[in-house]
Image (cartoon, rainbow, N blue to C red):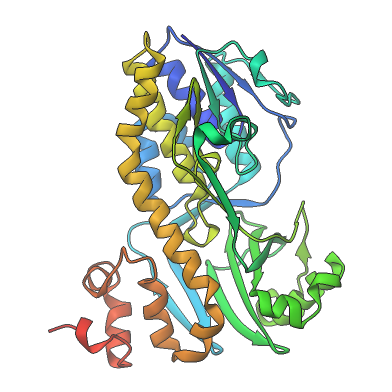
Amino acid sequence: MKIDIVGGGPAGLFLAILLARQAPDVSVEVFEQNEADATFGFGVVLADTGLSRLNDAAPDVCADLVKAMKFSTQQTIISRETPIVIQRPGQGGGAIPRLKLLSVLQDHAARLRIPVTYSSRVTDLTSLQGDVVVGADGVNSRVRCSDENGFGTTRYDLTNHFAWFGVEKPFSCPALVFRKFEGGYFVAHYYPYSDHMSTFVAECDHKTWRDLGFENATADERRAVFERAFAPELDGFGLVSNNSVWRQFPVIRNANWYSGNRVLVGDALASAHFSIGSGTRIAMEDSIALAQAIAANTNDASLALANYVDLRRESKDRLIGASEASYQWYESIRDWMGQYTPHEFIYQFMTRTGRVDAARLREQYPALVAELEVAGAIPANEAHP
């Protein structure tokens, strides 16, 4: 069996590595449209829960990633100019420079002699001879776009506007800042990913975008407003651009995970909102399931793809459901910011996906729950009996 992987990002490279180990008789080739050292964005989050699954699949790869990661055991959330510190369970959240993440995966692929063709944009999928063609090529997937009817693709954009920046300041821990500024409603998501840099996601709701004239502003003018809005946190540092395009988040879903011999993973299959900080991890976990399915069915591509869906759909649906609940909460951020006290806001934020309730909060974040209870921020029907 031959597997052609379109997309040499984390999901595509990790899939190739796993297949080379688990199904050595399978031929694997990766096609990446960018150069090997090209990257967009800054740091990538890989939380401890996700790392444990990656470690189970490829301990040596995970160990190399962990060596390059910046871990934080705390998170700060600021609303109404009141900072509340949350102590994270376990080793906390981790982040790694995206370029380093790719470099680690590229090195492992090279050791396994996996052919990876860079600067190769696949424009004609019929030119690929693989028994399986994998779309690991993100939200703008050419594999998916080649057969949207077959995949049952739907797409729409959320209303909030956002852009990814960097900051040459290693913040002490990840933070979320919700701030009213100059009549607008703004959100900053930031986290350190090295000893010198942090990722900084700037966001505002659509009414702010219109009211402050962002539609007709230049990229520099928009950035300057966010630098003023979050001046207390930036502390004189400017926002660094790297393909920092302002956009509205695309919600992409596919009724069918595969069509013919073409199959999707990661954001090509279902886009995970950045507010849950798990997009890369979800994509790499898709690759774990697909590799397992192919390795178990090396003589039957159709059975392998069906097995992939059976292995992964339930857990994927839960994660994407959490993503949907999270972005729906952010879409109404103007209401939340005006409705709650800082402690009430924290409770609403921590339980926004529906996967965490008061009982789970109490188990994982006992100090935070104690603080919330003192502040009367937990609804009476969910308070400790």
